[in-house]
Amino acid sequence: MKIVRFTTAAMGAVVLGMTAGCAQNIVYREFYEPNEKTSLKRDDGTTVGAVKAEATKNGAPNWSDNKTLSISVLGL
Image (cartoon, rainbow, N blue to C red; front, side, top):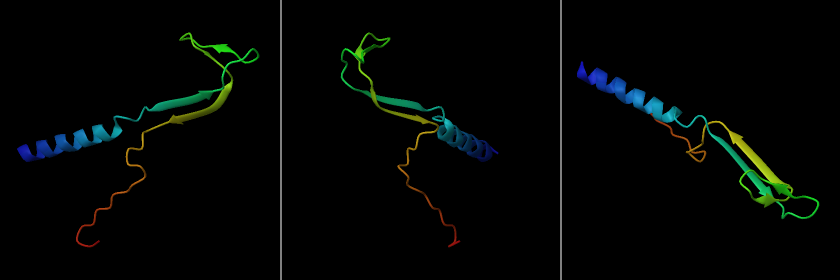
C-alpha cells in the first residue's frame, strides 16, 4: 500500500516538473543607434533607435535541444 502511494506521488512530481515551464514568453529586440529621425525613449529611460530585429517565442521551453529518448522493453 505504501509503495502505491510513493509511486503515485513520484509520478505526480514528474508530471508537475514536466509542465512547470509551460508559460514561457521570450521577446528579443535589437535596435539601431538612435538619431534625429528615429529616436524612441523607453519606459526604463533609455533612448533607442528603430527596431533592427525582433523575435518572439511562446510556449513550453525545449530543454532537450531536440534530442529524443527511446525506451525498449524486451526488444519491442
